[in-house]
Structure formats: structure tokens, C-alpha cells
Image 1 (spheres, rainbow, N blue to C red):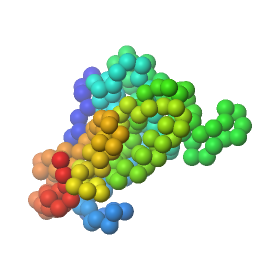
Image 2 (cartoon, one colour):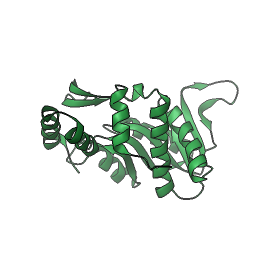
Image 3 (cartoon, helix red, strand yellow):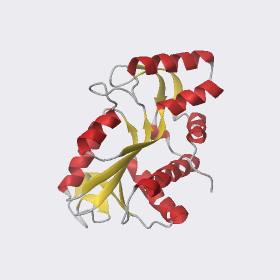
Length: 215
């Protein structure tokens, strides 16, 4: 089985309008020359490619007794597909779970579904890291459940400055003291544009990186 390819994923994302080039106003107020809409990761091809990338990254970086978690709602199919891929491609029988947005007051109750997370080290799967606010909420949720975050894997790292000069991913990794890894970065997108895009698109991407980007 071939390894996860950022360029193949970018191509599939463009084909399905998950990744678009143009002029987009982000929540931060920045005008971005590209936009990644994780809500459109809605084909078998894209889910399969994502799961392959998540599973490869986890297999290389996680320790034994792997437990993975996907935050509602977008993270639920990601974590389920990744658990399956870990077993089929890597022979790793990972436990997995997710949360509800609203707690149930009947049946099993609560906001957490799946593996019992108490006392366990958990890897969190997410789509795009922007400011890191949502991830900090997930960390608090897991902490309340008695779990410890072992690491985070995101689909896309925009590699932009967060509150300071560091990226949001670097800030989160520093505050949590855990690895925060990405399948695709802005540099991968720039590489794709350099090979497949227009000179104007490439110039806009490089200008944006020069203004807001960081290592």
C-alpha cells in the first residue's frame, strides 16, 4: 500500500471544492488566497486518504495501547475511519471515542461515547488548526473525563502566526507539552501551486506566507 501523499490529498481536495483558491475573509479578519472547508470532506476518497494519513502518523508516533478521540461533529467519521485503517494497515487495535454536543440523560448518558477514557493517554484527531480555541475545549473535556492528551494530529496546518509570533500549532504544543502534528501544511499547498497553479496564485500564496506565515 502506498504511503499518504500530501499532493494527492490536495488534488482530491481541489476536485471536491474542499480546497479553493480566491479571496476569502477568515474569522481572524485576514484576507486569505485559499480556503479549506473541512465540512466538504464528504466522499469516500477523501475520507480514505485522510484516514490513511492519520493512521500512518499515529503508527509512527504513538505508543502502545493507542486510544484516539474525535471531537463532534466533524471528528467522528475521521476517528472511526482512522481506527479501522490502523487495524487493517498497521495491525494496531486502537480504542476510539468521541463526544456529543449535548449530554444524554438516558441510556449510557453523558457526553462521551465509545472507549472508556479514564486514566488513559489519548491522541486527538482534528481537521484544521486555526486559533486552537476548539482544541483547548477538547483538552478540558478529556481532562474532566480523567484522560490525558498524548498528542494531536490535524489534517491541515496553515502555519500562520497565532496570538504571537508562533503558529497556533506551536503555541498549543508548547502549552500542552505534547506533539501536535499535521498531514498537510501551507508549504505543501504552495508546492502544489508552484507545479500545477497559475503564476498569480503562486504570487498570492507567497505574499500571504510572507505576511502571516511562520515555521
